Amino acid sequence: MALLRSGWLWRQTSVLKRWKLNWCDLWIDGSLCFYKTDSRRELEYRVSLKMACIDVRSGLECGGLMPPETNPRENLIIVNLKDGSTLNLCANSEDESIAWKLTLLETRRNPVFTYDPYDDTYQAVPLNSYHTVYITPGAGPGTHQVVVQRDPFDDVASSLAMGLLAGVAAGAAMRSFLWMPFFFC
Image 1 (cartoon, helix red, strand yellow):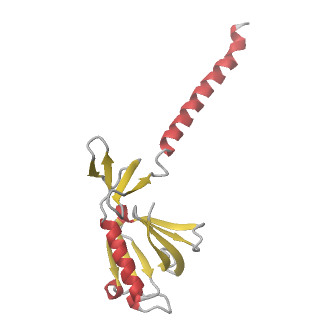
Image 2 (spheres, helix red, strand yellow; image 1 turned 90 degrees about the horizontal axis):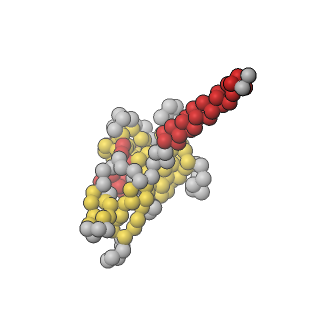
Image 3 (cartoon, rainbow, N blue to C red; image 1 turned 90 degrees about the vertical axis):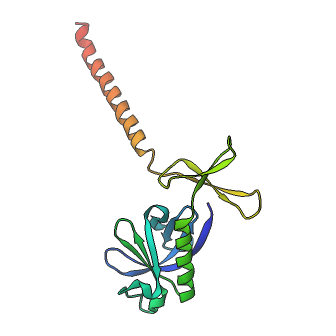
């Protein structure tokens, strides 16, 4: 998967409204990931912008939001989400804030396509489809970047159902073995 932008951003927590400094990665599939350090080992928070983002505002457009102590208002970024919540961010400079805003908006708008090898065509993919190979144009002519996006929770229900079915079958078999001595008496 291609990394579009990464760097340090302040993120306001949702419960205590404290500002925390996080390493942020914005991926081509619209995932905005927040880590404790730039080693990317401990994921703290993840937002899918293609699914949840409505609007991105920055600087003085952010209204009454107060930035962290050492940063001016011009560094603020607000990401409005579909569920009515907001993701409050703050960059270290005004230029970084504008760059993050433009990249966030571009990621939200980027269409996702799938390649059909039989027709040799690209078709737009609905944003909620899983198990799909996404193809985006590459840097040079004839090059493409392949991104496979899969929801990690897709197979939870099917494996749970198979586990329940196996448990019922095992229970039925065990009950039949318990009655077996009475048939031979």
